[in-house]
Length: 409
Image (cartoon, rainbow, N blue to C red; front, top):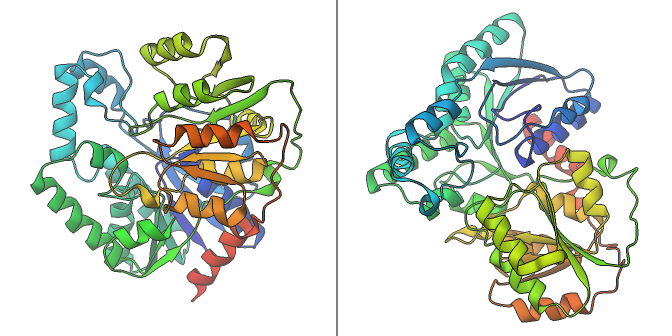
């Protein structure tokens, strides 16, 4: 069996979007299953992490198709110095031209802005498939426009094709918080059904997201963590109780939660944002409220972010607040499991993240209104405590067993 994976995000792109399939590819190759990755060249990435190139496994073939850069177009037309929005279409902070552009994108560009990469990616895929024999195509999203590349290849060549959903489609947080028109929602829904029902199978990151998608053949495939990423990392004790949030803040994640929690804690502590790009106003507000308790480090290499997780006494996870958020399962949660520090999650008590945390006995989940209850729990945590929960079912090795079993069925 030989796999062609189509993904817009792949190293040197950084962040959570690349971690799932970077790990999966490594384990597939170890199992003797060849993988070729078709990804973008010069794409619009939230940030780059060149250090991830060293983690590309030996034997992995990567081909690139040129992606049109929309960053310059955005800045020119929006008359803004801000970057192209990524996972956060927060209109309240935008000028009038930027708001108009976002409205046009939401209501006239389907299914997402990365769709302009599709023609070049399709040509590159056809060229590769004409030179070598493949058995399976897998398309992963977001961006969900990548599924249409695979759909077109499936219609032309008849190869087995599976989709991979790392997030919802129509129910993704930024579309829920910034709803498109009724007509646009209808078009998205038709596209969603067409893709899921045309594919031979669909891999979904959580049960709740699978339930929210149209009827189709679906298999739950968690993001998972790779124990090898943590093998050489050691926990270093500190006299301060270190509370950390690692990763980006996106739409529906309220920075005020950190301030309220910090103010409710009675123990001496330090609150860190690691690998988090905060706006000037957000940073000023946090510094004003937290003073010398705040530690801020913007984007850092992935290996450094993992060490920061290990060197913590509490890790914070925030599930984006919007209707339909119960299925959210981030890559970060699985890395938190492997890091060994207690996890404080703000999100729905009956959500997918809360279930994983409860199943593994690695922390507790509270609503955003339960700040005092969360603070009481944190105040009673033993400094330096390390989780010893049973996390094996969420390892990448277990997910690969599920993936291969489905592809061979």
